[in-house]
Length: 237
Ligand code: MN3
Picture 1 (tube, rainbow, N blue to C red):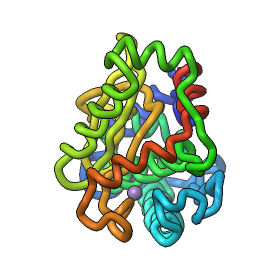
Picture 2: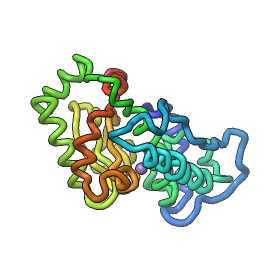
Picture 3: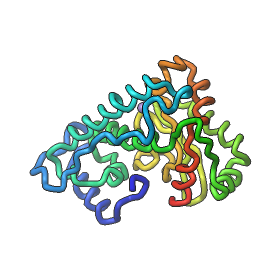
């Protein structure tokens, strides 16, 4: 669903519709249409305390119910009463350069957080990459440890706020990072591909427990990666 483009035809509709809108300000208004999508906060697949001690309950609660909710509210506001409100989010992201910044920031924010919650799991639930994913990781990065090191370097090196990604591309797995709430599905991304793993390196993701020590957060974070889900995403990508 969220990792697949819906269809070529809806992409074309997006391009035609977005050609009529500028890259700043608001989208032109028209009748909302019966197909308008209202985004809502997805439930976590675990409790807010479930990622303890790696990510504390208070951080998860604020991150999920305040930050993620704000992206959703602002995305709904930015798309309200526009024809683009009927488009699947992935279609919007694929042509996001022709949308106002509020759609890029909040559409990205909603997509990225919905994805992030799914690729984590309680640390007591030991998971590991599937044989197929491990083979691809070894082929691209040499070993799982070498991959983690390179991924953490991308995440640590992202200046300011943003994300690090493991993406599937036509030429294999790649590591990338994006600023703010951008992601590799966006036409504005330097490196494009299908995300199969991501880490949020905004300070709101770790500050209460790790303060300014992003590297410490990243070292611990691997304990809550849901490799079952990441493997599934890889094999379906
Ligand atoms: Mn966040």
